[in-house]
Image 1 (cartoon, rainbow over the protein chains, first blue to last red):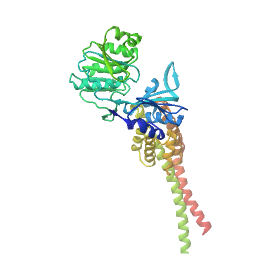
Image 2 (image 1 turned 180 degrees about the horizontal axis):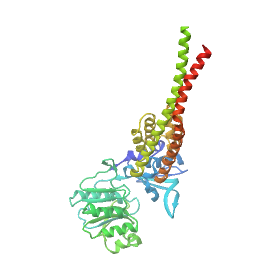
Image 3 (image 1 turned 90 degrees about the vertical axis):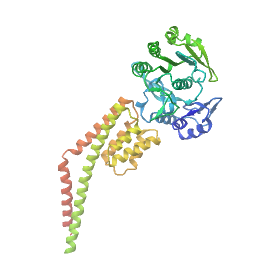
Image 4 (image 1 turned 30 degrees about the vertical axis):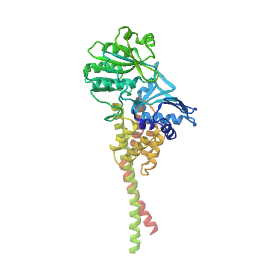
Length: 280
Length: 170
């Protein structure tokens, strides 16, 4: 298991950093910080509440650490999250700043959710014989991205051509300068912090991939881009929020890709972070 | 007689030196303000085209200049990296505290810069930099008005004051 744990700790105020390091080094899934309430450490098997309450200074510290005092480096905050070094993601709640009907930022944050990115090599074992387009589905926090990462690695190592990844949130293969935080090998090309519709079109035109992988298709535009890339001599791997096949079929946003049978195989994440194969 | 002569020479040269020091301080103030405007130009370009994060941006700005501003921006970068304070204004204040040699007008502009950095989105930040640059330009214009006359006045006044003191005392 790999994790940019030090990068995660660097986000936290000193007093919190020590306790989180002691209690959650191997099992922390997310840390929830809410103003006026004690921090909640969501571990893999239980939730621990610390004693001291969170204040606005603590939240500001985390946001400053994540953005390096540079709000312009975190334009994703308009979507309610900040991607940080090590692939960790911070969800933000507070007063939204609206301009012309769309959100441009969040001021006075009141709660943060700091998710830990961990990499488990080998969890995609057993998918070697699955061909065609693959859609990974699961509830939030069920391990879709972790499985996607290993699936990409496995495909890249199987010498079936190059895999191009649109890593919109910088979570699949986060880099620190020239080095990836997580294991990366084989022919993988990563386009980071690019929107999926733009990225998919770009990669298709310029990188001649044998496979394109994207994480979390949530918008109609993402589905449309995948649809455009389908049947173009390139296979697709994607993840989507849906706990089951039924939920997937019921969500209107996924209707075009479901009805068109763009994906051949579903990998459904289970509660214990394992997965099972279903035909689409 | 000889002692009086030496005393007169010492007084006159002391006062003249004071006048020359005032003139040099004035020149230094102008030079530092010009450097600061240069740094602001550099920061604007970096931000506009590369969206450089603040610790990196201030480190690069330090490398682009020299003297007192190099130290201030270098320290600011360290303060930001170590997250000493929750806002940039405090980090700037702390970086300036350890540099006693900052000309007064430049110090005012640096404080204003500290208050605008890291608080806004890109466009807001660029506007903030522009506001500080305008402030620097106004101060620079004021300093440069009749610069030559003023510098000569400081030097002449020093010599004359020295001569007057020498006549009065000796």
